[in-house]
Image 1 (cartoon, rainbow, N blue to C red):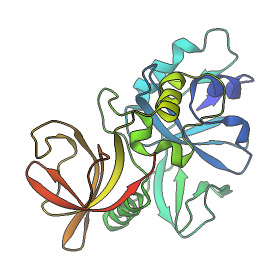
Image 2 (cartoon, rainbow, N blue to C red):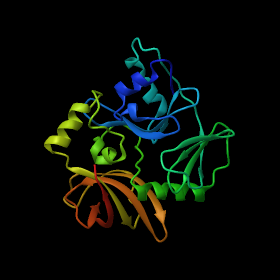
Image 3 (cartoon, rainbow, N blue to C red):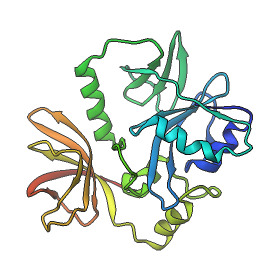
Length: 253
């Protein structure tokens, strides 16, 4: 969470989305990039009733992200804190809406919703798997642990609005603008299906080059579906360690 009078100003300077478009009762995708345009953090961002900015992280180490942001506070009247929430799946709510219901904060995700609460709750493995599969099919990636490797466009973050092309400076903005206006982006987010389940992480293609990254994998009936950052040259299948997987969708940058 980011609290204080300068919370929005600080987030606008550091994050790649346009916080001037963030309204009360709404959430937006956002990302924190390295100066080289690689994704350090991916989040669903909203403003709470007490005017704190809440970042629901999608992967990564929350404490490492907080510690990485802290030096940039400088003289800003803002604080960075961690606040653990338990998430569970809920019924359909309008996309990008935020509302409170009792102890829960509810993020609308269109055909489903994310219910956040401080109290522990029993985890339903089937519901968690169904949610994960829905994320994969929507092209909503999560970040793997470790050093940032992926450029924002390779994860489809411009499409999601996590990266704004028409706002002021932020870390990585120059690289992202250059890729968008001059070309050079060679990877895209792919939704694939097949067996066996591809292991998350870096993999070789058929040519032996380590050019793909499997981000998320979930079972889907008799096969598995996954999100993969891979070369845009792929057509109908992706070769991962010698196994061909069907490409169901390619998400624009």
